[in-house]
Structure formats: structure tokens, C-alpha cells
Image 1 (cartoon, rainbow, N blue to C red):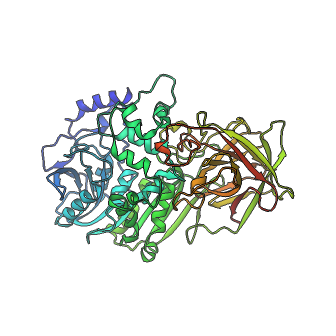
Image 2: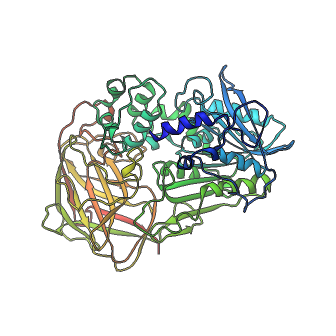
Image 3: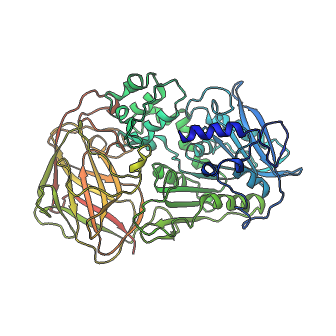
Length: 610
């Protein structure tokens, strides 16, 4: 309702003039004329960059171009903001499908122009004022290359910087191997350079981001699930996420066959040709071909953390020396998380200001960038610098899962710093029709109420999971890197899943999730290797690896790890049958056994920084 009122107001205001020169008679509306309650939708950047760069003019030039796509007759609306004067000017450019307004409405673009840098936004094909039909991903490479070649030929353009976040970062990455000479750098955040990794973990689809994004952004005439009174954000999509077989959910629930979505959910192997041809092959190879410096920004509770960091890791070593990796304490929307610990310094790094300063140094001052790796240390409330990535831990701390009960509950046990000499077993039954729901997680998006770090239920709050809790720490413990859980397991079905949540428990018993991950027996040989078979009742070891974290657990707090077989809606619910998850119509229960204690028993391995 609030957005509807906003758009109605803006429809009235689009004819209000703002101080600007225009090469067309495009109407311009004044954001400052909005009622104060709506101005938050359009931040005021007036004077935002004055401390970093001088203002070169009071006004700016705004005009629009319909630029040919280069591959067909489609033309793409391009909004251009330039400093006053004859130029040539450096410009920063982004391409986006997220277009909610028309005409001259981008307040930050005006500030870039007032400080001497042009600002250009192109609407993706089929979005905003651009012609054609929006099919996610497939046209971004050709359309982007056409735009940058057009800009490279403009006499008023002296140099170019590409920027973007989320899908708009995709539009930057995808042209990384085809950059014209005028492009001098890229500033990209929150998008993975390997689509399979973004979509899957061990053959299980990341429902809450990928399926949720589909529903929100499909241009087809779909029946979008309605949010009912009392529902938490995102839960109205759960019937879609849980539909079996999910390969038919598009028609059954949305009313349209979406072939590209069916392709996403049925090609579960990393080695599948689908992920190694066409647009996804272009994306996978792009980062290694980038020949300009980059700033790459990721979030420790952003669902694209893994793939975003991979973009940095795959850079050419010479380019990496001039590039930056910034890993902050935020989710996909740059909201600081967690909130139960001190975060006074979490926003010391401001991405909006940093992006301008980086481009100003590169494009205006023409300074060669310096390499940098900065990671926010959660709970220590400080930014730490590293000389290389991945973080090299000082040591690994191994804690053993045990069968020593910690309470009167049958499924709460001790997490031991000394390995119990005798190997025993704990067990639970997993029923896919009653999955464990996530209470927080790093790859959650649409279900915004549980995105990031949140309080958790008491240990052992369900019978289909087991909890292990350590003694209170005697000293601060800095965990830096990938947490790994090695489980020695057995089950009575031919495939199943095992998941974990690592959490921090305070002395008063309040628990907050830190890291979560999942594995299936079919992919126990490696996430990027083909599916393998499992024989029921066979004892095997699986390694579950979480996304990187930098977190200092304070002395007096305890570590808790929950073992379960589902983490919905973060990941698709495993049916307990071997094969492609999305094609399975039925489920069955599985008896899960975890072997603890002994020299080869189940354990968690923490990368520790001294």
C-alpha cells in the first residue's frame, strides 16, 4: 500500500522542474517536493561527496538515448547524467532490471555529475523504458558489450568505470572478458561468478533466494502467490518451494511453464553441460579474463558470499595485486547483521562513499589502485586486514561430538575438546514432510524475517535433530575461514541429507546462529563432482563445509552445533530418494545414525586465528 501511494504521488510530481540542463524535453521531478515520510525511498546525496572531491558545477546535464542492442533491432533506454561543460568526462555505468521510475530521478547520479563524473544507467532488455522481453541473464552479455562499445566511441566520454550490486553486478561480470580500452575499473558487489554454486549446495536448490527471486521477477503472466494476513515475509511462497515434483510447480502454482527455471532446478551436477555452455560458461570464465582493477564487495550473511569471493579468487594475479576484496557484516541488502553484538564499527566502511572515492581516484586523479583485503570481525567489532585470501588460520581446533548427555533431553549432548575413547552412536528419524525450518541463515533472502543471525530455539527442541554444546570458553576464540563438520554416518535409504548449524550460546542460554551448511550422500565425494551412489546401511564419512566467517566468540560463551537433515527454506527438502530432487514426487522417512567418539568419530573443525 505504501509503495502504491508513493508511485501515485510521483506520478503527479514528475512535471516539477529541478535545476538541470536537458538535451531532450524529458520531464524532471523534484525529490525534495515529496512529503517527508516518502523521502527515505530517495536518499538525498547533496554534499555527500564534498569531503572527498570538489564540486565542479551547480547543475548537471541529463539526457536519454535509445541504444541499439547490437544483436537485433531492440533498443535499450539509457539515462545519462553528465557534468556541465564540453567534456570529455569520466563516467560510471550500470545496467539494471530493477527500474521502478522513469525520467530524471536518480539523485546520486546528480551528485556524481556535480563532482565531475558522469553517471549512466541502462534499463535491461524488457525493463523500464527498454524494448524487448526480459528473460533473466541470457541477453546481458550481448547488450552490455553493445553499450560499452557505444560509449567507447563517444567523444564526450574519456574513461569508464562499471559498477553494480546483485543482478546489476552480473551485468558487469558477464562482459569482463570484452572490455573496451576506455574501461579502467569495476566495482561489483553481491553476485557470484559461478551460477551452479549460486543455485546449489550438494544437489539441493537454494529455494529462498532462487525460487523466490523467480517469482518476484518473472515477466511472464504468472499467478503470484498472495501474502495472507499474519504471514511473515516470504512464507507465502512456501507452497511453491515444497511442491512435488517441483519441476511442475511453475504450471501448478504460477500458471505458466518457465523453461529456464526448469533448467535451473534439474541440472544438479556441476559438470553438467548446461552450466558449462552459453551464458553460464561466459560468466564462469569472465573473472579470470578481467584486465582492469576491481573492488569486490561481499557480505558474510549474503547468499552470494561464496560466489562473490570466488570472483576475487579467480582474478589474474597481476590484476589481483591492484584489486580489493571487502567482506562486511551485512546481508544482501547491506543491513548489518548480527545485531546482538557490538556493531559500532560495522559501518565504518560505507560502500556508497567508498565506491565514489575509488572511482574518483581511478578516473579523475588517475591513480593506480592498491590491492587490499578487509574483513569485518564480528563481535570483536573491528575491521581486520589480511595479506592474502583465503584466510590462513593459525591452527585448527577440533571438537568431538559425544553421546554424553547434557540435560534430561534425549537429544542434547556434550561437545568435547577431548575425544571420547569409546565410539557410540546417536540417532534420529528424518521425515521430509515435516522439515526443520531455518531460524536464521547466510543464504536466506525472501524470508527476510530469518535472514542473517537470529535467536534460536532451545537445544534439542525437535526430536529430528541432535544438539551438542561445549563448556563455556575460557578465552576469546577468533574463528576465521571455513568451518567444517565431519560426520561418520549411516542411514537406511539410498540417499539423504545432513545439515548443521553452528551457534554461540550466551551464559543466560540465548543462542545465535553463526554458520549453517548441508551435504547429501550423493555428493559426498565433492560438491563440484558428479553424483555418486550410496548403499543403505553403509557407514561413510561426509564433510560439510560452511561459507567463510570471521567471528570472535567471547570468553564465557559456549559453542553449540545442531545436526539435522533439513534447513528449509534455505535449501530444498531432500526426499530420501537418490536422483534429481526436482523430479521426485514422493518422499519417505530415513533413520539417521551418527557415530561419535573414538579416533574417527564425528567432529567439528574450527579455523582459529591467534
